[in-house]
Length: 289
Ligand code: C2E
Ligand code: MG
Ligand code: MG
Ligand code: MG
Image 1 (spheres, rainbow, N blue to C red):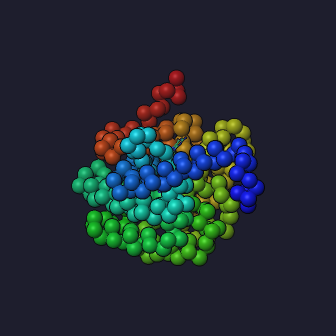
Image 2 (image 1 turned 90 degrees about the vertical axis):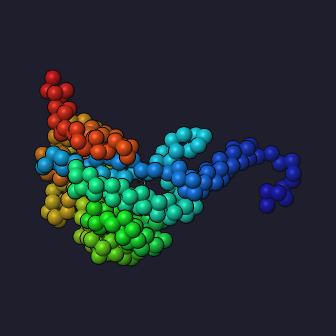
Image 3 (image 1 turned 180 degrees about the horizontal axis):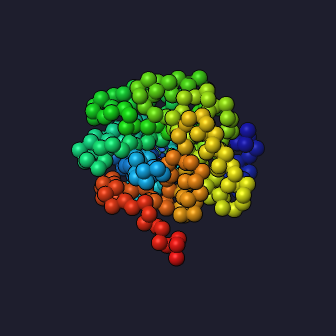
């Protein structure tokens, strides 16, 4: 149509669109190379148990070391990977790396009891191959399924309720725990909480961020904590950055906390040292001053 309107027709969007499309195509190509050339790796953020005050596990978060651009955030490349379907391969690599790490955990007395959470997006669930990939890797690396947890977000529950339920049931049958990630950010419906056999929910960090701003914000975090505990579901507070926030969620009966207050995601080789020297009360002095 536009072509027929004459060769000389000038559209000032053209250049920008062309640049965006080119950038996007380059990212797709590069991302394919990244999978083939092992440029993707995992970092690990501790989850701290608020009763024992010890690290009970880690969330595995994918990172891309681009040969020219350096570190690329998953926030940038996961959406591209989802749209192109590359997320399926990336997800397989992530599951394999997490299982390799868990098999290393078994050799280190300090880490042997710890679990690893792996994030899974809805495209991966809809591809319907992930449960067999998980099964295969658990066997290959001799990993106890109880040590691998899967995090899914609410979006899959809306996109394809049946596929999501099947997936969660497959995982449960394998003895894998399922976490509902970023709770409260999607089209949260409380009915999901009892229709799906979730083992834990992770309250999104946007709620923690504003917990000190008003009594209302605090009440929301507290009520969600109560709801989870009444439903017998574990509850994790994401994005804890300050001691004040930590103390609040502790008093609201949250089981687990995760966030920069304790640690940013750690490189693989730093995990064991971190667990060894972890001190829950390390930040206490600074707040009491
Ligand atoms: P998520 O699963 O909700 O992961 C938590 C994100 O919050 C991580 O960002 C983590 O670094 C960040 N975070 C943790 N504590 C704090 C805090 O105290 N303050 C702040 N400001 N941020 C905190 P990251 O690593 O950039 O990952 C972003 C998202 O990318 C993840 O959100 C997840 O949805 C997705 N993602 C990461 N790895 C994977 C993966 O292997 N597979 C899939 N499908 N998605 C992944
Ligand atoms: Mg997560
Ligand atoms: Mg999350
Ligand atoms: Mg989140």
